[in-house]
Length: 386
Ligand SMILES: *Cc1c(COP(=O)(O)O)cnc(C)c1O
Image (cartoon, rainbow, N blue to C red):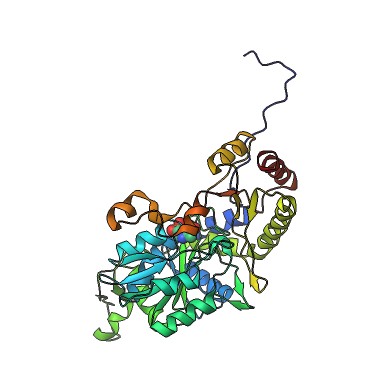
């Protein structure tokens, strides 16, 4: 009301994330809608094949989310009550919730200070007679020390389920990661590197595991049951176990397929943005950047910095006040109320994860971002933390 007519209009808040949905994506979904087949069908099968090829696995099973994928991954490996699963506290909570839902006990190993990925040495210390699996999370899209983790798994006869929600494009030593361990789980949530709206996928090189996953994702129904009744007439199905309603459907797959065409171009753009951020912040003594292994292709999913002097929330609020939306990835899961109460986890369990959890903040990083928008972010961070 009292604003002067000459004052500059307020700059709108730069979004922390913005999915890039173009006309091709819209057409693909409308085509699927008009095709007469809405639920799990040919487009899901096509998206499964495309993702399997992209991540270097023989089989892929589409589901409603990465959370659903992680859940049935554990069930397909017969992990349940009495079992322990070792994972990272620096992850989204669903990685841990599914261990609880499977009836197993989540066990947290600490992270490496400079990547915030699981530290294999800490994992080794957490292995007990009850340990059944390791669940590494490729934080920010940067591959974990998979050689060490797979070695530990082999030595102690453990399963490995990868949380690849951040790491669709990642490679390690030139190898694609979708077939490492027993199962890899991907996310196509709205903020991930590509999206199917909501959606997830499991990949594996084991036909047996893939078959079990297909049964678990759809009520435990067996499509092959009809064979037992002969080839003629009505095709009956059987229920082999109490499964879940987790199937990806064709509208999701149509969007996912269209988005997958852009995955490498978008990765290139994020790489460019990350290089500019690194360059702009390298000289800031109060800011710690994440390390990237020279033999790794990171998926550049999120750009995380750590505020070493200023309190994170103060820095976060200061940067947001300058018109830049931020995220926090992640405050450690073991210190969330439910996990403290239910499992008795306390501060001190994973000191490096806890220190990082107090310092991390995530800057905007998405291909739709312009150079000018990135300059705004850089300026806000340098003013606040320089
Ligand atoms: C997003 C995310 C998930 C969950 O993915 P949804 O598809 O939303 O279920 C799991 N783990 C990590 C590390 C994530 O970032």
